[in-house]
Length: 312
Image 1: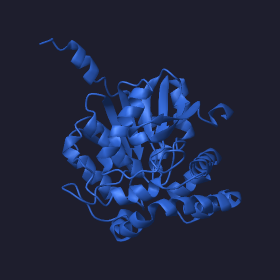
Image 2 (image 1 turned 90 degrees about the vertical axis):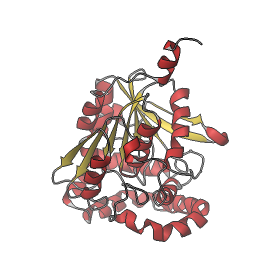
Image 3 (image 1 turned 120 degrees about the vertical axis):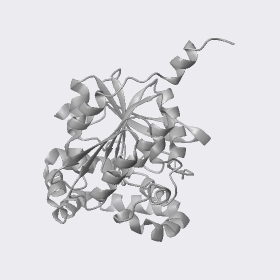
Image 4 (image 1 turned 135 degrees about the horizontal axis):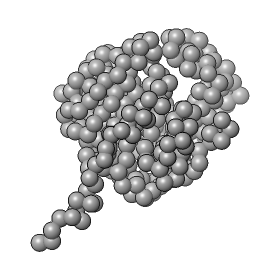
């Protein structure tokens, strides 16, 4: 799998307010586009090897996007999760992408749902892998690690930028021990995550993503923490595109009940239990996720509808 070791293309795209978002592409350059949204923490290369292989074999173009404050993406704090979609629209337009699918892992889940809410004419479908549920608003559910976020969010908000660079410095200093750190983390995780992190190619992907993303800053997870304590800017009822949700029934970070709760509130959702798996379980079924999403669509785009509308 040497040809899958690195992205086919990496770069950055100009977005609003003179900022930039960095991205990495896998698969084929003219394939069906899928935006892959990393977890918290994570970055643009957090795409499983199986997903990269599927993309090459099935004419799919996977685009991983760094959220602001990771990799070379300009640090920024959105007003809410929905605000992020203004940048996603510019990335899609600049990369020549009309309609697309979106996959969000863990902390990327809210951003994937936001894309479905913002672009019902452009998004074929949304995949969520162990996604975070709201802590505010009508879709709120309590419990999980995100429960502690409101207690630390004020401190993080006040120190977000300097803390971002301090975290990056810390990761650079311990880089020679990064592999041992992953092993240590895996040793105290439930069986599902332990087995995934024990796979050499899976561990290598995580290490590459962590080290690459933290070269300059580690602000994205801090911004995520703040935004997850606010209303998202949309409700589950407003995500009218098809959503397919995978969740491990032994998830120790985002409770399984959170996934069930959200799937029940989404207008067009199918929920899949990953039996015996914990938080990273969705990464282990990446091929199934992509196969399922590729069956969703097509959507009529806003551009095509505008072109077809009669002139006044």
